[in-house]
Image (cartoon, rainbow, N blue to C red):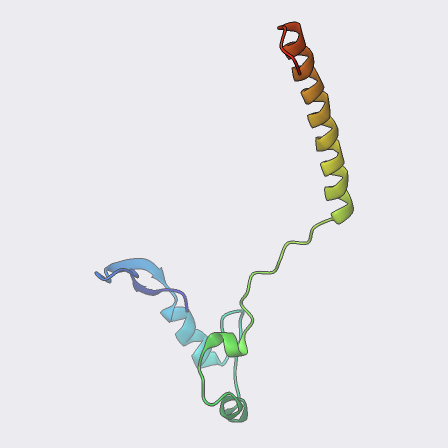
Length: 100
């Protein structure tokens, strides 16, 4: 459950976001979702009756896959562009009479 219908600050004022109706519906119908899971008594015992959601549900954000070859190609392109710009700056500085 992410929201209980109250703000998370000390005032705990009423807000629109409220997961309690959804939790009650899932409990009543014994439905599982990405935020709920039916757990056996044996599983609870194995986890020393710990009711932490992360014990039973992996709610972590999946890591974004990175195309390493594409990233390497982009890096090479950026390095070439940087070299080109550095040469242009050096040329401009020489034209201004500066030692480079």
